[in-house]
Image (tube, rainbow, N blue to C red; front, side):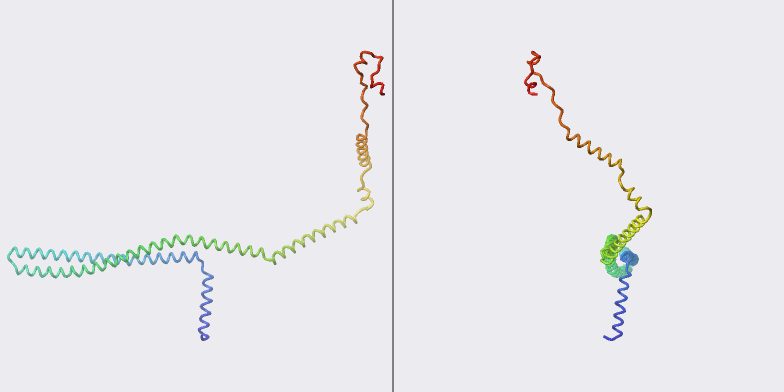
Length: 253
């Protein structure tokens, strides 16, 4: 392959790649529909012309057929009048028109067959355009969904990229380091500000607080260790009857 052929191939490849990249399916589909509708309009004009030719041939056929019938009637009229010479001339005219009738019949039948095919092709073309319109909406929806999915996937790939995550983690560690340094500076500022002895004493609990806590603890312990109250003397039925006699319980104590 020569150098010019290779350059031509490279140029065509690059041009096709650039065109493919620039192609917008939605715009291309809309343009294709417009092109097909223009072709349909032109086809309708051509079919209409063919139908007009067919009608013209049919009119000529009917006219020649009528002329042939008229000359036949004239020939019969001449025969009734005893003028065979005129009848022969009339029949000759009738034969001439019959010949035209045969020719126009052949032309009309051929034209009618052609127009019937053109009508069928035109209808088929119209149906295909309507089908293309219906498919266009579906294809555009699929194209938009594919673009959205591609965009989402690209975004997710960027988020899951190790470099981005490493940078994110470094920033998090830097923030934590800055917070720790700020807290350390605050503590140092507090440590070296004011009288340290006074701060230590102020941090001690007050005596009242200690006394109150200790008193509450002692009261709790005293209540838990107190002995049970002694039971009252119980007199039996005999004591009631004889007051001077002590019961067994009294003797026990």
